Amino acid sequence: TIYVVTPTYARLVQKAELVRLSQTLSLVPRLHWVVVEDAETPTPLVSALLAASGLRFTHLVALTPKGQRLREGEPGWVRPRGVEQRNRALDWLRGKETAVGGERDPPPEGARGVVYFADDDNTYSRELFEEMRGTRGVSVWPVGLVGGLRFEGPQVQGGQVVGFHTAWEPDRPFPLDMAGFAVSLPLLLSRPGAQFDPTAPRGHLESSLLSHLIDPKDLEPRASNCTRVLVWHTRTEKPKMKQEEQLQRLGRGSDPGIEV
Amino acid sequence: TIYVVTPTYARLVQKAELVRLSQTLSLVPRLHWVVVEDAETPTPLVSALLAASGLRFTHLVALTPKGQRLREGEPGWVRPRGVEQRNRALDWLRGKETAVGGERDPPPEGARGVVYFADDDNTYSRELFEEMRGTRGVSVWPVGLVGGLRFEGPQVQGGQVVGFHTAWEPDRPFPLDMAGFAVSLPLLLSRPGAQFDPTAPRGHLESSLLSHLIDPKDLEPRASNCTRVLVWHTRTEKPKMKQEEQLQRLGRGSDPGIEV
Ligand SMILES: O=c1ccn([C@@H]2O[C@H](COP(=O)(O)OP(=O)(O)O)[C@@H](O)[C@H]2O)c(=O)[nH]1
Ligand SMILES: O=c1ccn([C@@H]2O[C@H](COP(=O)(O)OP(=O)(O)O)[C@@H](O)[C@H]2O)c(=O)[nH]1
Ligand SMILES: [Mn+2]
Ligand SMILES: [Mn+2]
Image (cartoon, rainbow over all chains, first blue to last red; front, side, top):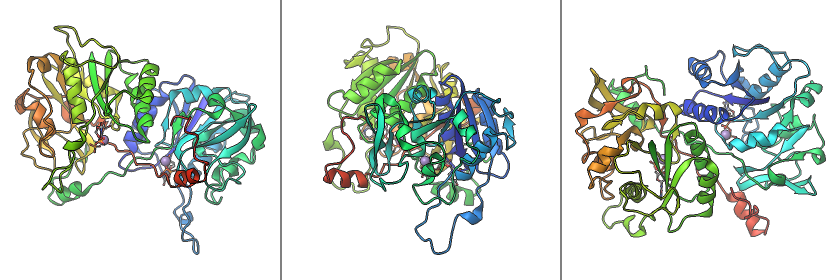
């Protein structure tokens, strides 16, 4: 089973993003979608969407603590997003967290499986999931349209990862995007302390998890020795709502009873 | 058969968009994808993607004439996009245009079918296609995140379209987004002159086709009398390539042999 962990938060494009991601995931056999809402309690929109998706899923919630976002003396600091949510999913996989919907039991003792962190706005080729399915430790591949580059990804020689193509701090232990690796479930469960560090410096979030799990030289290259791009770090424009605000002032806004 | 007409043009996110759209379409039975490249000749990227998609498809090309884009004395004018491409697809359906790949023969004489214009960047629920399948003339439904509103769409009373929710020029004959209607193939073929007018004023492109085909009061409401949003006018951010340009100047740009 591939456990796909998706943090998500309420915004205008949320339903669109989750619909197209759920449709992609529905093409993948033996998949379990772990959706973690950045919310205090589950929302009707996400709950209904999951129920209608036809996917095996678990619904969790984890509100990003507001206080953690801004820190004095760190003006350029952008807190990484989705961290509390991904850690909550790790807690659930370890039997330390209760689900609010879907399958509540964590994977049974000794279960095989792979864990992949799939943000709600990226674009995934269905082929990617077959590439990661056989992950023994941590598998890796390139990610398109990320880090100001056409792609970032591991450099492979003789079937081994020998470096990373990236423009930004190439000396990070794992200069990989969140969408560029998957972890075997048994490995993850064998390291109870392995999780994402919400205080990691920018670009070091992935390393904060992976450093607990593996040596960079043991990464398993996938996608034809990391020569094929099967996932893209797309971002969706925030829709403009100027007309909506004008009509709402006139009492003629879009029917709030219609979910978008 | 649903003929889904998609104009597309080369840009960084093109493959990502077409991959996720093709995956959505692969969930829909009895569908034929008519992809029209804004290019002089078919590109290897699109040709390979179509061949690998597993979909029934036809590949066409239609280059947007550069001269048509800017006109003197029309500073705020934004030429609508994808027009030549959609018209080329209509030509193919009418047996007046040769395909460059995929199924070359147009639908056989007397074939039933529905034509839908699906831009490559919107988000489509698989349910939308079942809503449009029974179209007799022109069917309509709401579109999310368009026109500065949460959604635009027809207003329905007693099963009939009696108006349109829109903020912009509500007196247009058909104040509908391209993603908000489908046309029956026999109707389209019975009106050989029906096509999109590339010189139509902004917001009047849809009307330029539909005025040839139907009276607004005969539109067939779908999606629970136009109360469900099953398509979203999403737009994808243009990725920043600052680091790519820097690395390229150093001769260390992303491997151009890897398709993104
Ligand atoms: O306040 C937030 C912002 C983002 N996210 C989720 O975290 C992931 C990464 O966020 P985003 O895509 O905005 O980050 P970026 O594209 O900038 O890496 C996505 O699945 C979001 O839905 C979240 O749960 N709460
Ligand atoms: O020069 C262009 C610009 C756009 N398009 C296509 O035309 C459709 C509408 O374009 P776009 O999504 O950019 O328009 P908007 O979102 O602004 O309505 C899309 O399928 C594009 O791929 C095209 O073929 N050539
Ligand atoms: Mn993102
Ligand atoms: Mn668009």
